Length: 173
Image 1: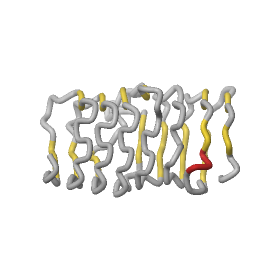
Image 2: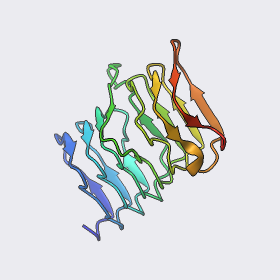
Image 3: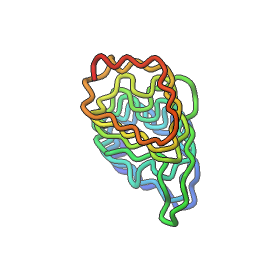
């Protein structure tokens, strides 16, 4: 796996297993079929040259912790939990309790859509996020210390009900 640069996964594939492409340092692009709905824990971890994941994460129903941890070249704008082309909302669950989904990655902007109901612990830790937008259905934000990442310049909460914001350290924002 270490020499692969571009991977185009076959149509019909629904799941990418835990650590499937772990440490594939030469990998620069991965093309996911529209049928993928689940990506396992640390599936792309330490793919240091991975710059683009097509079509992205918008349709995923399950995202494992550490999915893009140490993907330093990844600069995609990430969209999670948004509507599909047929306008059906995608409910997305973050799995595992370790967090660090995009820790030490190059991702700067992330949009959490209405399909995501809660944000896991350590979601923001060690990220390079400059802009984070939470969709209207996120109602619980577990304890997270964002001070370990660079300064965030934009935090948008779009929610019409009560929001439970638990033990955030916003000193660096």
